[in-house]
Image 1 (cartoon, rainbow, N blue to C red):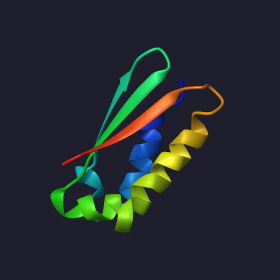
Image 2: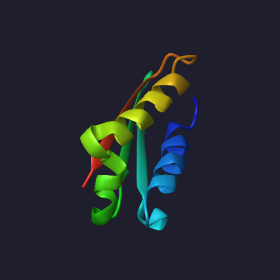
Image 3: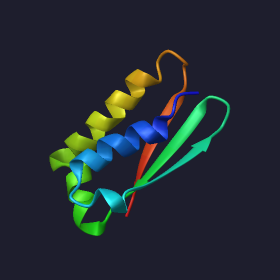
Image 4: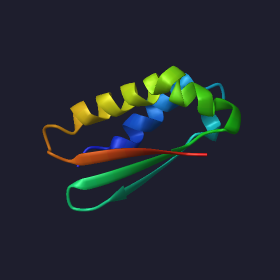
Length: 79
């Protein structure tokens, strides 16, 4: 199974001002993966973006990466 958590961690760390504060947790079932992302409170707005554009872009990239293995990947943002 591809490393969705590492992909999300890399993208999020490039967006925020405190990359060392990014925490990514991954929970896997058979073909369902949940990636939970937590950032510093002041970086939460940067992660979500105006109107949710940034987080939706991250979800789209991960969705594209999950097409071949037919996994369902969900990304949750924790505050």
